[in-house]
Length: 504
Ligand code: MZP
Image 1 (spheres, rainbow, N blue to C red):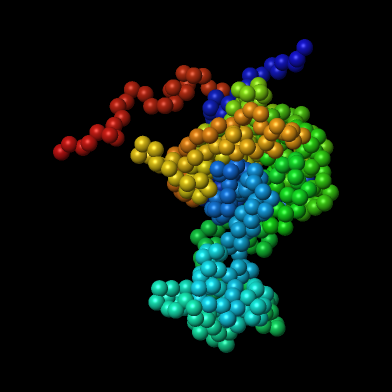
Image 2: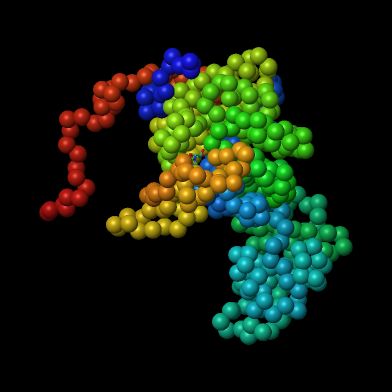
C-alpha cells in the first residue's frame, strides 16, 4: 500500500509569526537582506550572493532583458526564460550584461566614411546615442573620434554627408589609457564635464568606454548586483534536453547563475545534466536544481547532482494546474519546511550549506515574509514580476483598468514541453499544466520592491533580527484558525467607499 504522510499539506496563509524581543539596534536601516545562492562549506562565504532575497521566474511573460536589468539594479536576479531558442536567450542575457558597467565595450561603431544615415541606423539598432568612430568600424579598431546625437540634427542636416564632418576628432577627445582605474576614469569625466570617456590601448585602438550615467546609476542604486567586471548579474533558465548546446552559449553570453526550469527535478535526467555542467565548468558557474517538494528530493539533488541551490515547489504557482491535472504536488509551506529541515540536517552532517529557493504560490508580501521565516534563503516569483512595467508583455486595457498578460510555461501559449518532460516525447504537451490570463499592472520594479522590502525589514525588526539567517533561526510560527484569520482583518468599523463623491 502507498505510504501516507502523517502531516497535512499546509500553505503560507495558515501561519503567523510571533514577535521576538526587539532591541534598540533593531531598526530597518541596520538590517541586511543579503542571502547566499551558491553552496558553500562551513566557515566559507558563498561565492554568489543576492543583495535582496528575490528572484524572478524563468517564464516568457516574466523574465526578459528589461526585467533582468531592473531587478539586478535592485539587488535581485532574473532568470531569463529558456523556452526560446538558444540564440535569443543568449542575446537577452548579453543585452542585460551590457546594460551597465564601469568599462563598456562600445556597441555603436562606424567608420569615418559612413553617412549620417548609416550612423542613425546603428544608433536605432543599439538604442545608444554615442558612437565611436574607428578606422575599420569595429569596437577594437584605431580610434578616430566620437559622435553623439547632439553633433547633428537629423531633420536639418543632409543625412548623406559623412560622419567625419560631424565627429569630434581624436585630438580633441578627452580619453584615458588602458590600466586607468574606474575611480580615476570617473574623476576625469567629472573634471572635464564629459558624458563619455573612451579608453584607448597604447597603440591607439579602442578598448572601452566609461559613461557618466553609469556612475550616477551606481550612486542611485547602491544595492545593485554586479559581477566581478561590474556588469549586472543575470540568471538563466536551462532544461535537461539541450543543455550541452544551451549552457555553453549562456555562459559565453555572461550568465552568472543557471537554474533548471523543471516542474519535477527529482530525476536522473537532471542529475546527469547537472554533473555534466559541473564537470565542464567546475565551480565557475552556479547551478540550481529543482523543483522538489520533499527531503528526499533535496538530498538527491544535493548529494548526487551536486547542485548549488535547490528550488522548492510543485503545483503552487498562480498559473499552475499541475495538482489538478496530475495529482502531484504539496502545500508550499509543508514542502518548504520539510526541505528546510533537511537542508539544515545536511549542513550539520556534511558542513555544506545548500541554499533553498521557495518557488511559486506567493500571493502577497506577507507570504514572502513567511517563506523567508520558514527557511527559504530566497524566493522565486512569476506573478509578482509579471505585474511590473518591466515585464516583457504589452499593457492592455480591460474595462478601464490596465493589465498585462501572464501565462504559465505549461500552458498552450508557452508550450514549454521541456519543462514538463524529461525524455522529450514526440507528441509534446498532450495536456496543459498552466493557464493563460491577465494580471493588473502595479508599477515599476523599484516601486513594488520598495514596499515589499520595507515590510520585510520591519518584520525582521519585530523578530529581533538584523539579517535573514537570524530571522529564520529566531522565527516562531503558529498555525491559525479560520476565525483568527477573520480576527486579523478589520471588524465592526465602517470604511469610506472610495466611489462616493464628496458632496460639499
Ligand atoms: P507564481 O509566482 O506566479 O505563483 O509562480 C511562478 C512559478 O510557477 C514559476 O517559477 C514556476 O516554478 C511555476 N510555473 C511556471 N509555469 C507553470 C505552469 O504553467 C508553473 N504550470 O507552474
